[in-house]
Length: 150
Image (cartoon, rainbow, N blue to C red; front, side, top):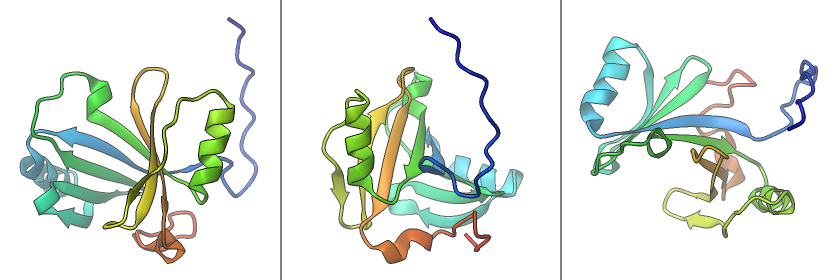
């Protein structure tokens, strides 16, 4: 296997790839875990959706999602999900397919206003790429690069 070249420092102000929107931890004790991250670590709630057992917390310049699950998950690949925001989901899908990545059709979540692609990295970790269906939502959770709240 060939060695990877040493990465060059990023000089551009805009990222080249998708924007890491959040890391999601899938947890069995949702309410206890959410309280721990808020009360013990001091993260700030952005969104708390108790009926769906989902919380989005501000973690400094990043975001942490906590998703409740009913069944126990043993493998780390089922417990961690990286969620990337992209501007053009169809373009990203075509780019991934051209690169040989197995990607299904986009999934529409009309109730929450986004479309997403589901895929896995080479280690089996779950990844989601999503784009808001309403461009006005792009900044609804704060654009960390421009310093807006969120």
